[in-house]
Image 1 (cartoon, rainbow, N blue to C red):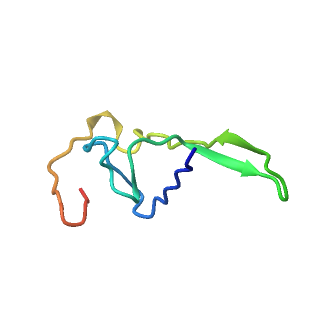
Image 2: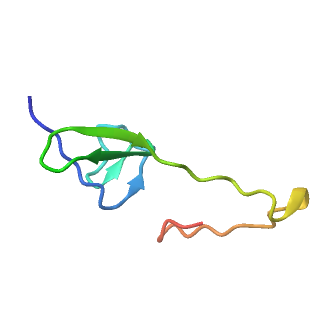
Image 3: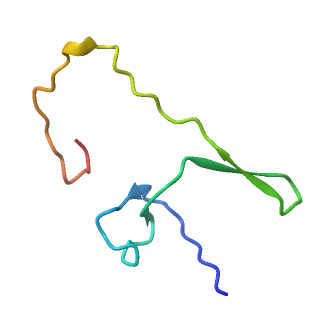
Length: 77
């Protein structure tokens, strides 16, 4: 069976395309995990990583978004 190897150098998730058409360097879905291995062995474990925590107490309950700007060339909001 062939072994598939992909390097995610772009680091960008692409959920818009079909999974068969996602270009190399992009990915379709992800899990927040880390593979821990030991030296000189084929043994490893998959460990979950701590995720981000939403911080909502900075502005209180009265925070309001007044606008946004989309920069599609740089893929930023």
